[in-house]
Length: 77
Image 1 (cartoon, rainbow, N blue to C red):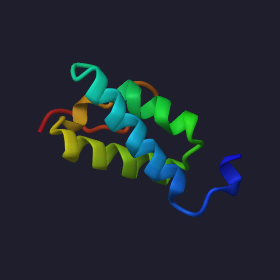
Image 2: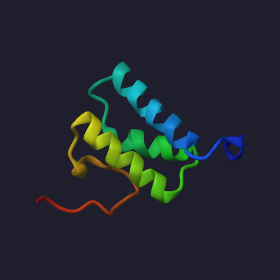
Image 3: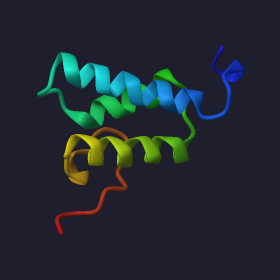
């Protein structure tokens, strides 16, 4: 079903998913939520990075909080 969505719609749905989940449970870690959204909405690696960057900025979370399988996060500044 995801392949029938207009371009960019899966990313918009992923942003909404993360935002809704954080609204329900504000203390929930951002990294696992982003990973789940990427899998659930079958996002490309580029879209996953865009989602992660957007969510970190929108929710005031540090880049180092990105957890799970990424491994591309820089160390401390």
